[in-house]
Length: 242
Image (cartoon, rainbow, N blue to C red; front, side, top):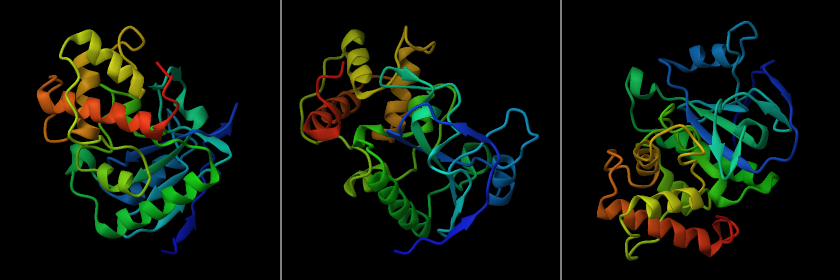
């Protein structure tokens, strides 16, 4: 599809210290798109925030910050052994009221545009599938977006992110094994992050097993962990990362 891109510049950015290797999905979490974009482009708000793009429900893309610059969308965050996700990522704000204002499914026109926008971003940067994440993945316990209704499996089917391989034996249930699996996928776990392991596991569930959000390592959650590790080994990112 041909994307409709409208310039809506934000002054809230700075220089990047290095290359882009992540794509982070958000929802706006506000009652309407206009209110969200006012916040993302406001130079006087404290703290100042921004994203590279906002994607409206009708599929319109609003461009705020050039991809070469560091937008301020992830906040305190962690992924694959590194903090400061803003410095290495592109952020897309997807218009949705979110859990506070009436969370709802993402409409087809919006999803279609997200597929096109994400594919274009991935084509411009060396972003491995394991580095396409949600805000809740990099900031568990602090953020829940883009939420359990987000079509992660559909995106993975188009090469945007990973999805667990089915039919594998579950990883063992002990806490050390669960923590090691989450760490290898990319999540920060104690003591790297100041959040209980159950909180981190809940955000894994929100992304990869959204039918259950309780932070408990039940059979299906542990099967999803095993399936995602297998997807990782199959080409999500270098298998030697621990």
